[in-house]
Length: 294
Length: 309
Image (cartoon, rainbow over all chains, first blue to last red):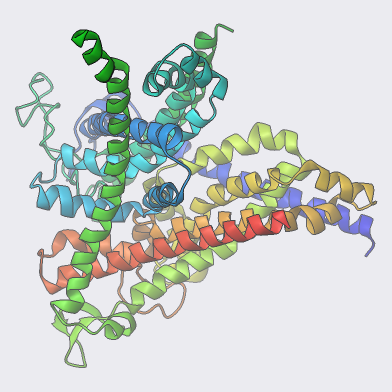
C-alpha cells in the first residue's frame, strides 16, 4: 500500500472513530435528557420523596444538595485560598515544597469512596457528629481542597510579576500586595475554578453515603432557626443529596417508580452541571471585563 | 529620644501584617497536609487491625477466594479471602482502559490533527462537559441500558464484569480523550512542519512523529483514566452484581473492592473482624491509588528526559 492510500485510509478510520465517540457521548446526554426532562415538574422539584409509593419528588434532596454545596465551599474556599497563596507567593523552590505538592496531588487522586470512609471514621465516629450535614460538608471539603488549591495556585501563577513589583514599589508588604493586587487580579480565574469545582461537589455521592447519610427526614420550611433539628438550616440533621438519592433508590428497589424518579433526578443533576459550566465561563469573562475595563 | 528609639526598634505595622499573613496562609497549607496524613493513619490503623488484632495471614487475605467474614471457611480459618474483589477491580480497570484507549487516542488525534476547528468548537466542550457528569448518572444509565443489552446479547443476568467495563469505558473516555488531546497539542508545531517538509503524508506525520512525541503525555492520560476506573465506586456497584465470587466469565455477577466497601461498611459493627476486613480492602484501594500516582510521576520524569535529549 502506498503512502497516499494509507493516509486516506487512516484519515477515514479517524473520522469513523471520532464520529463514533461523538455518537456515544451525544447518545448519553440525549438519553438522560429525553428520559428525564419529561419527569421534571414543579411538583417533582418541590415535593418530598415517597419510599413505597409512586409520585414522590426530590424537593428535600435538591435543597440538601445545594445546602451541602454551600457549606462545603464556605469551608474549603478560605483554606484553599490560603494554601494556594502560600504555595505560589511564599513557598521556596525546594524539596520540601515539592513533597508538599506531591502530597496534595495524592489527595486529589484518592478515590472518593476512600475520602467518604475517612469522613465516616473521623467526623462521624471520632468526633461524634453522626450522619449529618456537617460531616458531609467536611468530607466534601477534603474532597475539594486539593482541586481548588491547585486551580487557585494556577490562577495566581498566571498573574504577571509586574503587578507584584508595582506593589512592592509602592511600599506595600508582600501580604498586602497579594491580598490587594494579585488576588483581585486573579479573581476571574479563581471564580471560574470555584464554580467548576462546585459542579463536581454537586454530583458527588460516594463521599457522602457514610457521612451525610442516606435518609432525608421531613423538613419544616417555615422554621429557619438552625438550632432546631427539623429546620432546613440545621447542620446536625442527616441529609441525603440528589446523587445519593439516585444511588439509593436504584440499589434498594422498593420504590415503584424508581426508574422515573432517577431519570428525572439524573436530568436535574446534568442540567445543574451544565449550568455550573456555563456560569463558570460567563462569570469569568464578565468579571474580567469588569475588572480590566475593556 | 526614647520614643523614637522604641518606634525604630519595634516591628512596624506592615511587618506584623506580613507576618500574620504568612503564618495564616502557611497554616492553611499545613492543614491540608495534616488531613492527608490523617487519612492514611486512620485507614491504615483500621486496615492493619485485621492482620495484627485478628491475626489473619496477609497471604491468606490476598489469595483466599472465600469472602464471608464472621464465618469460618473450608480450611477452618475465618473466610476473609479478598482475591475475588481484587481480581474484579483489576479486570474491570484493565479491560475498560483497553477499550477506551484506541477510541480516546483516535478522537484526540482527530481533534488536534485532522480537524482542529471542529475539535475546538464541538468535541472539546462536549468532552470537557462529560468529564463533569456525576458517576451515579453513569451507574443509572448502566442499569437502564447496558445491563439489559448485555443480558440480551451475551446471556446471563446482565450484571457482571462486562457491564461494569462498558460503564467505566464511557466514564473514563472523556477524561482520557481530553488529556490525550492536551498531550498532542503540547507537541511543538515545528515537529509537524519538519515532517511535512520532508514529504511525509499527514498520517505518516501523525504516526511517526506526533504520536511518538506525545507518548508520555498519553500514557499519563491512560494511567489517570485507570486510576479513576479503579477507584470508582457507585457506578460499578450498581451494575456488577456484587457477588463475592471469583469471576468465571465476563457475564457472571462479580464484585470489586469499592462495591463491597460501599455495600458493607454500614452493615458491620466497628471493631469486629467483618468491619476490619472491609477496612483492609480500603487500604488496598489507598495503596493502589499511591501506585498509580507513582507511575504517573515516573512517566512524567521519563518524558521530560526524552524531550531534553
